[in-house]
Length: 239
Image (cartoon, rainbow, N blue to C red; front, top):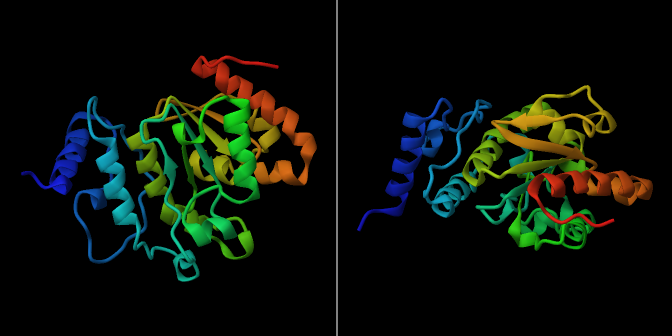
């Protein structure tokens, strides 16, 4: 019986050979010396591929990451959660205290609000989407990740996007906008009104749920953003 890891390697190698994009070599060959994660472009899984196996391999290779200072203070690495074949992917900033303790993204107060947005607003189960962050380890005191920390981690996120290959991505907050799309000067207010793509995937920008907890008046524009997402995905829109 073929080793599952070998099958995933062959699957990723096939992607490199048949696509104008590429996946980083560290998914194909484990290196003894860690290097900064590449920030290049990535490609989706092939039709009929095995995204579950690919994501499991990526999670295993990510688990012992020591590429930046955030690894020194983490309790648990927070990889990502959800359906690896999801139509919709949410990307936040980084883990908070609750996430750091349990290793699951968006389970604190902001995460509970995100769950309400998904299940009560979009009317779909939380586990039908995929959820990840720019960085996978909690920054001290929940500060925004520094650029070198985000750069060290972004390759993992781009691989997650490549494996899931959603129809749409929702960026939650300025940190996600800055480090995935490179818009470090643009406000969320302005970004909400623009059309973005990442490797051919439609990208929507809205406020981070933690901002809604601080400023409830942002709930209305966030709901307006979610209605755009629903319309794009062909989901019924109410209100």
